[in-house]
Length: 177
Image (cartoon, rainbow, N blue to C red; front, side):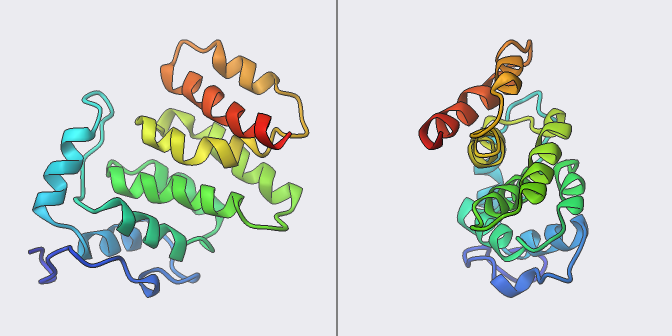
């Protein structure tokens, strides 16, 4: 049971984050409301040892539900989420990018903004699941009708997670384009 009396077994409520809510604190608070010590132990075991991440203790379904409810959060707020030391807060950030990228009718300007936030903050994507969650739709879909040179550059990187972005983004780019 956490400080709010919740056992952490329910899903994050959609009303937990509204479009007028901003900041890492609100996301973190909403995650803590559905956290549990048992889940924290499970998540912590999966974290890469050199990632600098700590676990809140939230099931992925709850993380994704929260991210979906926060999809109207401005793209400019996402880097703050990605800079959090908490794994689940970062996952909310990359999931928001992914959910935004899936929207029909997204303008080229908005799609480019998502792509730039992802790449400009790549150094904060310190676990494979962040890459797998957002790279296909954010990077791959953006590059469908564009040069694939950024993917080639990422593929030649010394950083394994940048190479992973190139691989996972390329799968969707090839499928769509």
